[in-house]
Image (cartoon, rainbow, N blue to C red; front, side):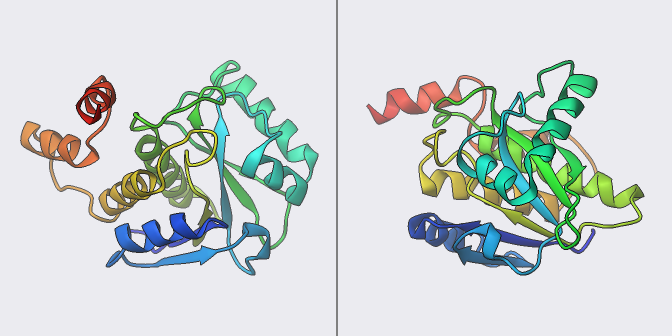
Length: 210
């Protein structure tokens, strides 16, 4: 497996505490309570995006302010050409920023448009897609991604509770670090059980909580 450092960065102390709990024991993880703009080193910043590359709010707006408005235009151009105008949740693509020290972002939708995703597995799906995009990039690109800066996924507009977002992100990272040697229904069922969301399971969970 490729050696990649994961930097979890967010200004919310409660989210950082949840990350520390759920990522405990996982290799090459650093939790930073702060802003990605203050990080000295990272190769790729994760854009916790919408499906249309509209980067005018939240972390996406901070990314555009840091890297420049032309980045948003390149992101939207890629979405138009590759996804016919709507990038599906569960996909992520790597695009160059033009920044010498921080050369890439991973554009990774957690939602189609701004909405609540608290009862979904979108955080897991997005985290998994981002890690796969980095993995695929590193298989062929001359300039590898060795460190990823990742904010909270789905924790702002998406209203995913910090503990649940941290759990889903950690599950995806743990699965990434431990790929299977073969696939079976037992393996598939066990993975779904660990993810714990998806399909109508979120609504079932909501009904139980009530």
